[in-house]
Length: 308
Ligand code: NAP
Image (cartoon, rainbow, N blue to C red; front, top):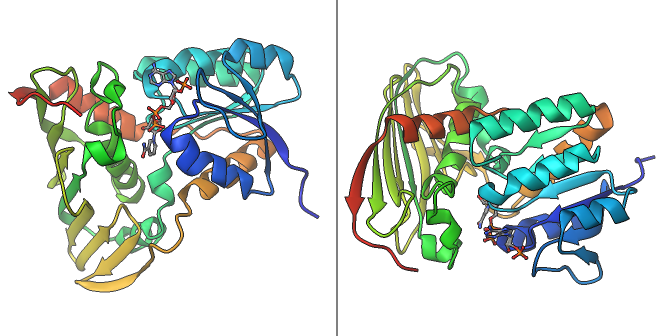
């Protein structure tokens, strides 16, 4: 017999909440979406609040809070939920700064609740197979190309180009989450170029270089076909992960994965259910450390103004 569903509140009813979180929760036997918290967004048939404090006070029966807010406003809400003794799941990137996320990790531990810094791209279809294939092989070189159209995926989201919004690292950190998951060794960022529009605070494009011979090219200005690819040359052949980690190729031939069902968010919520039931946390910050390193050592280059 399966365990009873757990009550969960979803905070930040915007694009990703509607596209992925709400359908994943509705389809899951683990969860009962019992409330939302958002200034404007609501979900049909679900009790809604506009302030986290009000939801926490009114619904002590809701033990888990999932945050689908942009990174900058996320910290105060996560802290309030943890202080109220609730388990917390964070969208990627888990916060605006490393120090605030370390603070949340310490607070969750002190409160004896679960904290999950989720990385949805790690649940893409071919990531586990790529990790298994690369284990034990020597990586000689790698090329990451993560080029998408910000107007298509983040229409009108000015927060993404504000300080703390991370610009092109908002999708780029997805590539870094896959990279840190599948690499058999730790990565060392040695250089970065960050192209920042003259009227914005965060980069629209970035090129990264790692000591391991891996390079990354992130760009928000790609119109037409979108590219989320990784290619690795090893001592025993070539591996490519395409379509955001969903398709695997070995030596140029398809080796599995598929695009038919987008299973990333159902996998995240199944993992969160397991963490809560086991009294555990999952707080791998490696993708954010690399992102932070890129902002620290990156060379800033001014580029053309950008408007949505
Ligand atoms: P979004 O739609 O712009 O924002 C989500 C909601 O957060 C907004 O609708 C807004 O709801 C609330 N919010 C509260 N304070 C805010 C503030 N200061 N600025 C803007 N919104 C604020 O963003 P999203 O695309 O869903 O992204 C949210 C998070 O999910 C990001 O960390 C992103 O990296 C991640 N994510 C996004 C995608 C995607 O395709 N867009 C994919 C995967 C992950 P109220 O106005 O109702 O409060």
